Length: 133
Image (cartoon, rainbow, N blue to C red):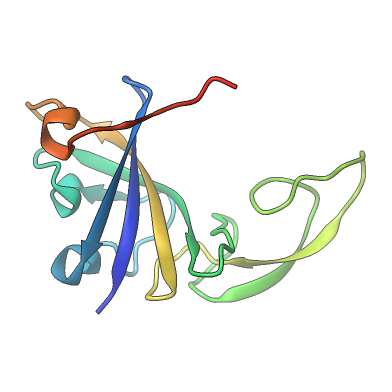
């Protein structure tokens, strides 16, 4: 069975909540892609809607929305998710994971796009506040 760490961002409050999901709740994420919406009940946010914004696998390789499927792929990047160039025009071949969530994914990033009646902090507990470095 799949087990994910789900990082739920609340854009209105500027907070992030970490939830571990497994079994039936994790199956709601399997086969979904970056940009798709999921029922928030999978992470304890009944009445909420979440949008999948990314994730990473167990080795830390990021998921990219422009790579199809769940598999690892080597792509030549000029920047964006998975590579930050040091100079203008610099490119690099990087191994990234596709945009589809599979058993190999360890963390799923999502943000709240549809709100329920209760406050997310009361449903999920204490939040990790964003650092202003």
